[in-house]
Length: 276
Length: 344
Image 1 (cartoon, each protein chain N blue to C red):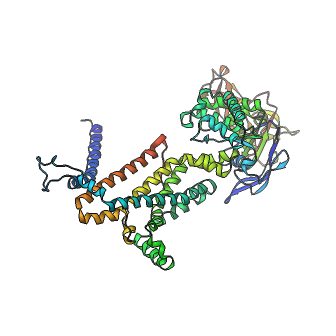
Image 2 (cartoon, each protein chain N blue to C red):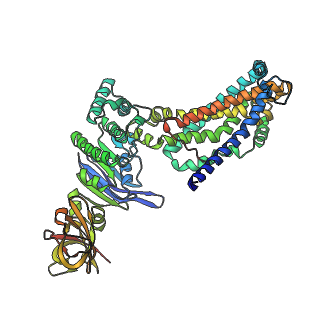
């Protein structure tokens, strides 16, 4: 046989073999989870007879109609919205001004925005809690006190996605071209830069939603009731319903991230995210 | 009509000197090209003119008024960039209209101006398209229309053709010149392509290391380069030994000619263009190679005294020249004056 053919076939087998292995690593536990959550059969052993029997989403529906789950989901939603708003208010102007006015600061800022991930959540919570309990006890009493924590936790990728978005549209020359045509800084930002950053902003927002839907440490340490903490409580009462709910949240998160990928690939604009 | 210029500009980036005491004065309606290798400071000079960079010292002026501290939006200049820099969220028409909108021109006037711009840049049906639907040449025409729509006092072009392929480059180059003459706008055009500069400029400023080496009409630049750098950068040139004779005349390739430039150095070289060298049959030199370039044939000759010499011969007269032929080279009879440079 042609040695070149053999080599390329070997490569093909290796590539696909590896891909299937990785896929199985993710998919098999999830299928097992799905079966546990959605199939009402008493036996754990999977046989040819029971594989299609008694599948139902009643567990999920029960979980979704639980008032505590509903209220905590709404809390998580609002926390995500406020965290996104807070991050945009801070980081959009910062990223734009850095890019168009002092691009030499970019590497420093890229490093600085990574700092939240260097501090473990427990250290952050203990530090903040000690300070605020003395200075402003009302702050920790409110569930929305999680907003700044999540905003901080989402900062590394929010900044990177915004920065990558600015790079992808060549924001600096757009800014210079617009200024040359007589536009003020505000006109450039609102009429030229922001409309072209929409994809990056939606991507950053979706990543933040995904983070809030999966974050447990901060909420649990601060004794707040969010969707993830409520799901852990619910698991004690109805393990199968909780698992169904977890799968449901996972699908929503995956859809969010799917939107991100689509937006990033749109119009052939390739966004290279630096610093990860 | 507007005259514009830079005087005594100095600009450094860290320890790199981008411009050192740079001065340039451009007459009304003139097209001046700044030409030089990359890193020579030509783009920096243009960006200082536009107000996108601030000079460390020196003055930018328009019609005698110092505008050094004015921000770009108050200078009223039009600028075209190498990478088009069209606004991706706007159609070609909206891009052209942007400067007029910012200046709060009434809608009717805006529509009229944009129509005229679309017409003179021959954009036609492409005017309704978004930048990502346009080809490189079309994008740059939109950028040009956008820059001139606001009737700028001065038009600044930063390597506007560098990202385009050869054919589009040439036609757009001629189009830019035609438009510039038609509207009579004072223009500065930065490029690293000497053919581009020589083809469209009223005057060309050759730059190196942050200095203006020579500012002259293209033909003067080619025929009477001010120094070795200009001679080497514009066209190609042989550097041949020259020996001093009586009455300030010099002997180059067997002929006695007048000279300009350095004459006091211990060793002096004459700058001779390939088309100034004649090749004749039978002699002490040997043809190393020939290359056919259409109307002319470029012949490389090894000469016992002058070393390697390149000569451009009309192709119709070059039939007999083959690699290995024995030839004699000399300076053509119509050459009266050569440039001398320091050869030590």
